Image (cartoon, rainbow, N blue to C red; front, side):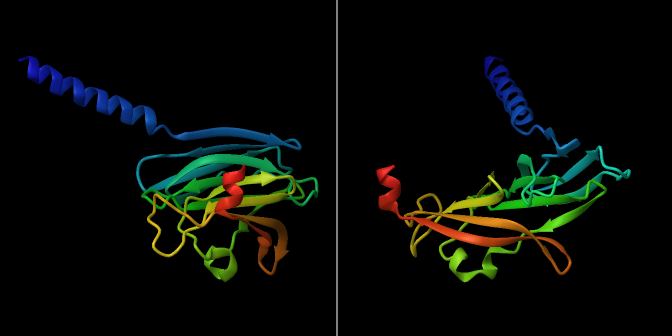
Length: 196
């Protein structure tokens, strides 16, 4: 009987911990009179992201879309300093690679929202050499920063030995809307990282 109780307790604790650690992402951010309520489910490898803007000059319906993996952070910024904010949601895929992703929208003169396109990293050979995921995104002043460990040939996923690379993007207008354009590549060798 005691063995059954231990099994039931283990099942109960496992279900409770799964519930605790698989909570949905929910955050509200505000800048320049515009707020964004960001909600993302966390139910598996594909989830649903919803962004509800408030304070725009026109009424905008919430944006709902699928994301690969889960939302881990959101930031609001005015990267191009035009007086209208951008909402950035950072995602990470499931699995050992933990590939980072970004969902971003810019407000157009505080009237409407347009998606921001982030080019695939593989489109730039210099930036993508040694890339195997584990990205982190953040806003640094008026640029978007993306950093990740660099893998050398033969490295295993859990032990990159090629240092760290940080990419900086600026927000620009492209042919079809807003685009993050690669602005700078900064490499940190393992020796430089060891010194810090």
